Length: 213
Image (cartoon, rainbow, N blue to C red; front, top):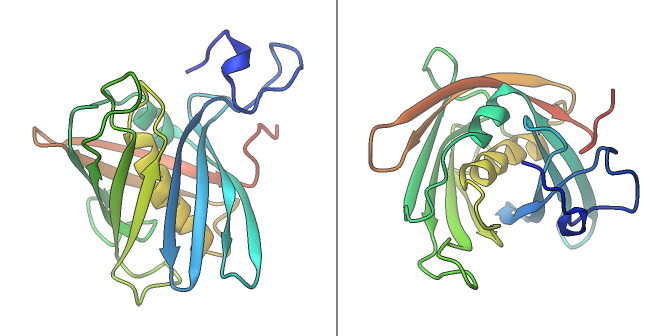
């Protein structure tokens, strides 16, 4: 997930080539929860099992800066999923490790519809609409049945799964006060029209998009 051409890193700085830094801007995701609008950049992490999230949420009276990371075996496995750029719909089901619900992150299903427009010079869809169906607890906005999101600016060749899963995890982080510093284990079922693909892994929520060790 790295590239030797450092000039292509959106967040690259003029430092040693071996210095850890976040990589490509994978996509932008935005959604509204109650009276707040959230805009997030999903960024390639410095390691294959990491995704960085930066952005903000606002109710137009106060704006909160967001900066956190998703790390763990679940992210590494999602990163290894084969991209399906011509698939127009995709469903992710989220479960507890034993297959039961509600899911540990309070999102039961993410249904994605990709754009039919082509990005400049490539066949990959450059945007998508997602509806996140909520299971209620532990999300603070349990009175809502779903959250609708828009994803824009997909980068060529990247699996779409990463951003959809990152959006579900981001909903958990911004609505759960003690999420940062914690970790959950969950099962994902990906349905794209063929046989479902099922993975189980852990994801931890860090307060930085960089390595802190």
